[in-house]
Length: 155
Image 1 (cartoon, helix red, strand yellow):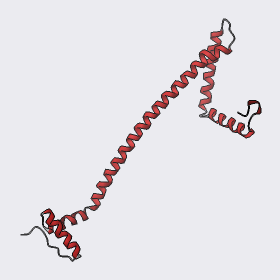
Image 2 (tube, rainbow, N blue to C red):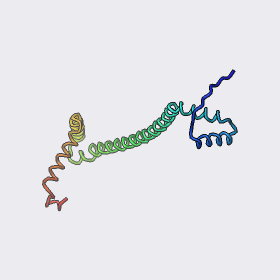
Image 3 (cartoon, helix red, strand yellow):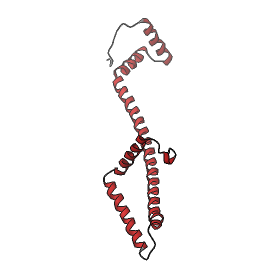
Image 4 (cartoon, rainbow, N blue to C red):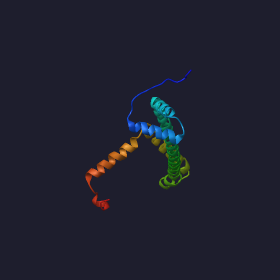
């Protein structure tokens, strides 16, 4: 009893020669070459899905590497910004305020009060999310609209 069915279709002679040559080269029957070709033809949708999944995995891996690089760069930038802000705070607290507040017995208290006032003003302005940036941009637009300042040599 046979476990396989017989198919008899007409195909181009050149294709018949290629099937026979491939079968001879592989040492298999022409039937097995035809069967393998038909299986591949019918499984092409699955093969395309497998190919697509492999490609998507590669893309996901590449994105993960890029995200890791971006995260590391953001961490470095955040660290630099933190250092800059700490530097500004130290400058204002220990160099700028003592230089502008007149000496006297209560100078340290007045410096501390001025520093706390500075911090409150920065906090209040920051609550308005970007107000300072907008003010700087608006001021820059006003300066650009007036042209060069002759008293500053055009700069």
